[in-house]
Length: 57
View (cartoon, rainbow, N blue to C red):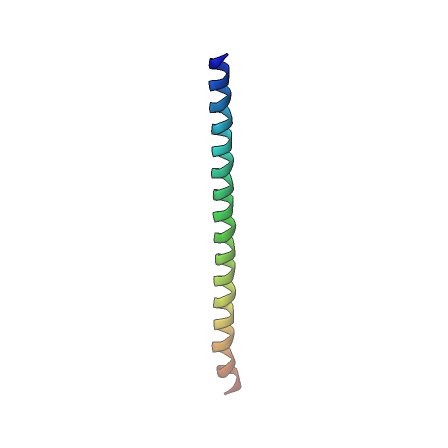
């Protein structure tokens, strides 16, 4: 019976650790995607700002 409890505890612990690691990886991926999108928009806005004075001249 002790062996069964130990095996169950290890399986539950491993599962919880795996789920927490997966959530962290997904969170980092989403955060990275948001930063990439923000950088792309920022560079597009910079390019548009730099193009405006040239078109008015």
